[in-house]
Amino acid sequence: DSGVTQTPKHLITATGQRVTLRCSPRSGDLSVYWYQQSLDQGLQFLIQYYNGEERAKGNILERFSAQQFPDLHSELNLSSLELGDSALYFCASSAARTLGGTEAFFGQGTRLTVV
Amino acid sequence: EDQVTQSPEALRLQEGESSSLNCSYTVSGLRGLFWYRQDPGKGPEFLFTLYSAGEEKEKERLKATLTKKESFLHITAPKPEDSATYLCAVPPGGSEKLVFGKGTKLTVNP
Image 1: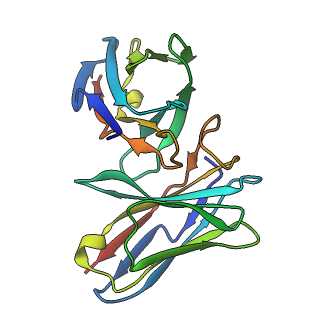
Image 2: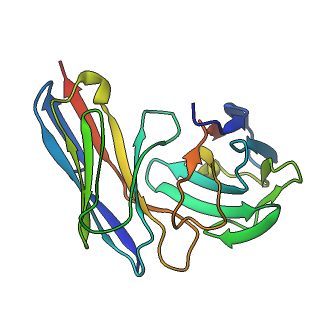
């Protein structure tokens, strides 16, 4: 158990809908990262938050947004969902502001299926 | 462009048959190379971080090594429970994302 908790584990929704994925980082970790994993793309970085502020952005679509709350949990909001958004979404946390010198620990993911 | 390439894509071993997985990288300003293990439908599980050429780390049947251009994950006398996809990743200089390779899917047959 990595200590990173993601809910829900599975989500099935229709095209055009909006969903929210939740992540609780390991105790004491201030950084939260979101990743998307699809069969053909591998693990792709979406966005990072550090202590409530956006720190780095990857290939995140404009239909997607995220935030980190004062209690350090994070939510990833996916809207106007398309079939191609079906994937595993992972949250990771680390203690530091930067990845140099520290590890990132991953949650068990949310499997999103858009039908 | 920062890249991480893993080989082979898939590897089948018999129980007890040792082998190595390769991860080659081209990034500017290496700040660590990370190895993860991922089981189907699960999140990546952290294994090792290596920071400088010549560094080695061990955990049970796994040993990771690092050179200036690549890293190896050596698996000694593997067991079926070692079957998984092994991923390596690096944070490119000036970036906070982890760039992952596509992984090596290891199958160990009893």
